[in-house]
Length: 155
Image (cartoon, rainbow, N blue to C red; front, side):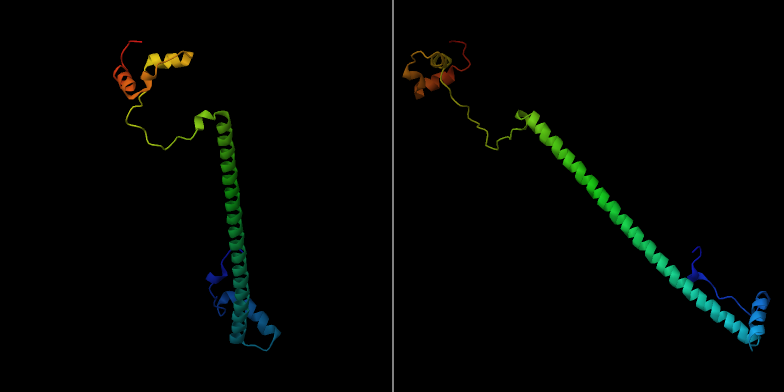
C-alpha cells in the first residue's frame, strides 16, 4: 500500500462530486439522498477498516522481516568475529612454535639485591680443567678475599 489508511479522512458524500454515486444507489433501491450518502459513508468506513487491518498486517510483517534481518546480520557478525579470533589464536600458536625461546614465561621470583659470591677466577679455572684446587678458595675467608679482588686483574 502506498498510503496509510489510518490518516484517511471520511469524505463528505453529500457534495456534488459524489452525485453519480448517490444516483446509482437511489436508482437501484428505495433510498433517498440522505440514505444514499449514509450508505456510501458506511461502505467507505468498511473499506477503510479493511485497509487499516491490511496496513497493520503489512507493518507487522515488515517488522518481523527487519528483526529477522537484524538477527541474521548479528549472527553473521558473530561468526565473522569468531573466525577472526580463531585465526588470531592459530597465528599466535604458530608464532609460539616458531619462537619458543621468545615466549618462555618470566619468573616472578624476587631479584636478589645481594650479589652472589663466587670463588676466585683462579679456583674456577682449576675446577674447569679438572686440576687440583685447594679447599681454602671455598671457605668463608677465601670467598671474602675473592669478593674483595673481584674487580682485580690478577689471575
